[in-house]
Amino acid sequence: LNTAGDAVEVKVTYGGFEASFNVKVTAVVVESITVTAPTKTEYFVGDTLDLAGMVVTAHKNNDTTEIIQSGYTVDKTVLETSGKITVTVTYNGKTATFEVTVKAVGLTSIAIIKKPSNLEYYVGEILNTDGMLVKAYYNNGTDEDVTSDATVSPTILNTAGDAVEVKVTYGGF
Image (tube, rainbow, N blue to C red; front, side):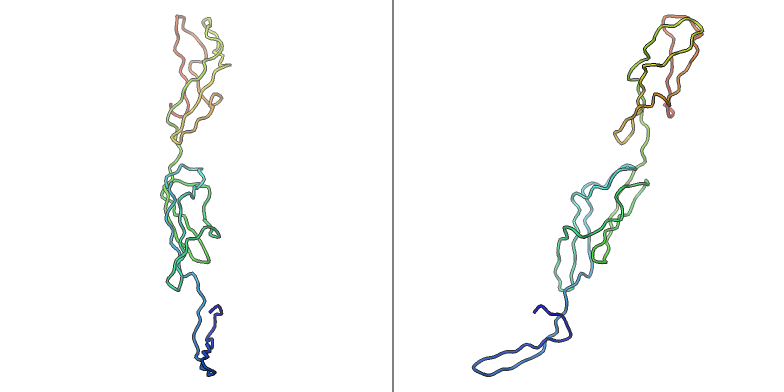
């Protein structure tokens, strides 16, 4: 029976006789959905949500379920704030949620990758940082060149000696 409505007449025939009765046919509809969270549930601010491993299941009024492969929407793609974030999945007007944890990106260290080109000076000269490369490393596994934002001290070399310590700082490191 493929027609939904209040009543459908069913006819039975046998040996030239016919009898009929009415049955109610109800459309199969999605009553609710459930979602199994994706495999990856921990992120850093700015990461894109990875839906691999997520399972969306439609629960229908005829006591059947269906795994939904497409046609659903997710309310977040880029995770822009830190904390426990609720992600909402919608299918056929029904919603379900799961949580992910989003961590703030934080500086973990800096390193002088390349020293300045000139390493010999006379007393009173200004330190020239040309050729120097300073990198910042973050807890999300990324790094960046911060040479132009790093602070170098001292900038005027007023002490004679074989080695004068020059400190490079960035972001508290």
